[in-house]
Figure 1 (spheres, chains in turn brown, cyan):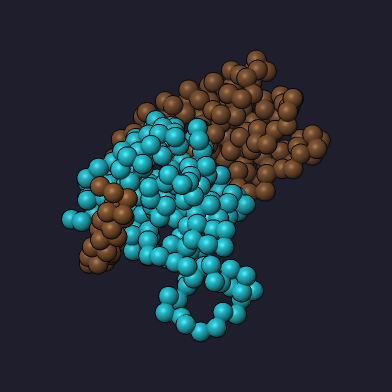
Figure 2 (cartoon, helix red, strand yellow):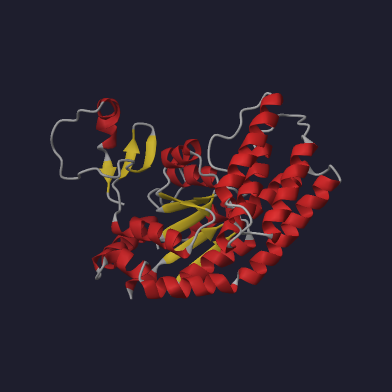
Length: 162
Length: 172
């Protein structure tokens, strides 16, 4: 199928879906469809929790040994992307703070291990006790710590959500 | 049901995230879902058979932004108007604007829910925006509330700067 044919096929398909009763929104956001999707997502929760646990454990181990900054930030990114989907919003925020600390780091970057130790500890606590602190409060605490440390390092703190 | 005729490409380097998206799509019984782990493979898939919709992660080898720019602008891109939904956990305004300016059709924040993912897909299908090529931009028109029937004078400064080019539109 040529690109032009693919594009025409797509337009025709989209028109058909949009023209159906309730449009695409009516079909895709049908409560029955959403319920099925949620159940299917929930089925992956044990895998996700195991992966989060392994990721957080890895971050703690690396931070404990003051080594592997690249792996710490990469793992934090994965934890950030997944934690909130499975009820660990606080862990997601703290992982986002770790990731934000690693973003745009300069050549020869020397990590502040005290900050990383603090954040790794928070990460573990929020995973063990997901309801203990609201994500907003954790975000404020993390941001405050990042602002202090990054200012000392002459870096701009993150300006968006963690 | 027409929705299950959709051919969707999913590009994410995180295996479990690919599985999560797959589970959401399976609730629609999509006809064909292809999975790749990086932007380079995603582009290869698009060249071999353009999907109806691509869900691409921002943070992966050959990142989502680079892939987006390649699909929209590369000479060998087979389908510049391909609807592309960028998934990212980096939702600061600057980055979202960068996705928009690179031609993203929609952006989904991670962590996503079934509802957030499917609502973006529905928006792409229900409200296709005119596709713009010109004024240094290639992608779906960035004015979400544009009145396509409007034929009056253009009053915004931005209209005057890019107006002629932004009128060079084709349907998505």
